Amino acid sequence: MRKLLPLALLGGVLGLDVVCFPQMMFSRPLVAATLAGAFVGDATMGIIVGVTLELIALATLPFGASRYPEWGSAAAVGGAIAGAMHTAAVGTLTVAVLAALATAWIGGITLVRLRLWNAWLARRRRPALDAGSRGAVIGLQLAGLTADFVRAALLTAVAYGLLFPVAQAALGVWTLSESLSRGFVVSAATGVACAAAWTIFHSARGARWYFAGGLVVGLVLVFIR
Amino acid sequence: MTTPTSAPVVRLSALTWVNIFTRCLAIQGSWNYETLLGNGVGFCVEPALRQLPGGVHSAAFKEAITRESAYFNAHPYLACVAVGALARAELSLVPPDRIERFRTALCGPLGSVGDRLIWAGWLPFCSLVALLAFGLRATPIAVLVLFLVLYNAGHLALRIWGLHVGWTRGLGVASALANPVLRQGPTHLARAAAATAGLAIPLTAARLLGHHVTLLGIVLGASALAAVVLVRLHGRVEGYKLALVLVALFALVSVAR
Image 1: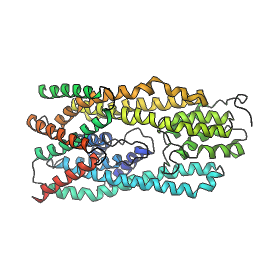
Image 2: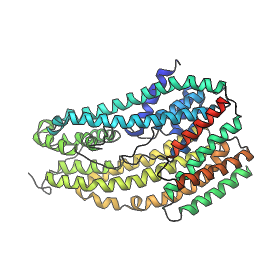
Image 3: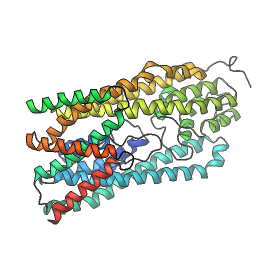
Image 4: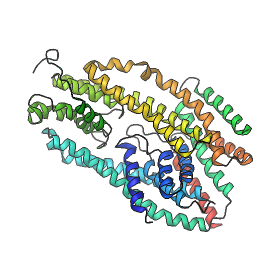
């Protein structure tokens, strides 16, 4: 728990990257969960959670004004929980992915609230904007950036603070085997990824054949390795 | 007001360009449901507008920044095209009504082209390449570096190209949107990403499961079934929410048993 403040700052930076700055995709689950896992001492557990979440995140692309989950802070929470629990192997992936998905869902709601707040602030500053105030334009931008960072940092702190003890308690009484637990989560993630791949690419002529060709090669590689 | 042809185009210093480019990375900082990217465009163009006659306290500056901070919608990366073109138009003293018409006309193309090229093409492609690297047993650092370098090579190149083409072509920038990369790129990327998805998904699942062949067979079968259900339910159920509910139920069963 002493890592809560630095983890919250990491979550703030990752959450900021989702929309506001600099959108370099540090916030993708693959990156964010690995960084958070490494931060608490286990990058390998972090990337395992990150890859699982990345498969699911393929289905939620940030088109225009659509509403989508906030993966940056969420993956930081999932990666940190998995990284901190690495000794309790059974069920860790399941619990960490569950914590991240719940945080991503809440994070998406907080993003919508932030955008409404930005609109409210812009309305309040309308007279200054209409008068050509340079300070109002820059101020609105900086206020939005700061608020997004604070939003993401608070979300990370609250989610980790609440979910880490729950995860610990759940793993203490976890009854199902690791194979079944991991198999279930990976099935859900790859199922979402396959559906996402189909939805995104099927409109391109011939893409389904490219997918099928890749799948055959992928399966051959899996079974000969 | 001077006509666009007679007004000389001001040269911007390297520092001003760095300032504009850095601001472009934060163009969505105050994104909201009313003006969308509008304030962000004003924020990005502002360093260039300081070159207007009379500087930041002039009426020309105030009118220009008000105009540039109004409603605007575009893909955040391709908005750099608009930033460059609008900066040039303002500094060339193009009549305001013409700038406003141009601004409105840019919104649609810069949004749809960017969404298809980046959100539905480049991002999933880079993500799948990184998953493939993971499936091929790359180390965590190698996977991260591969993803970030590959994605940002395209991302930053697009932003720099956008600013450059916007500034050099000004109000004639629409022809740049006929660039083959923007027109044909999404289709080629979709095919490449589809092939990479087919390749990466089983290899990624295999590594996540520790190469347990029987379990992998069951998982891939279950995944195919889940994918068919999700595709059939397209638009009615979000994949991540379904995953959240299923994993939560599974965890409850494991804890309560």
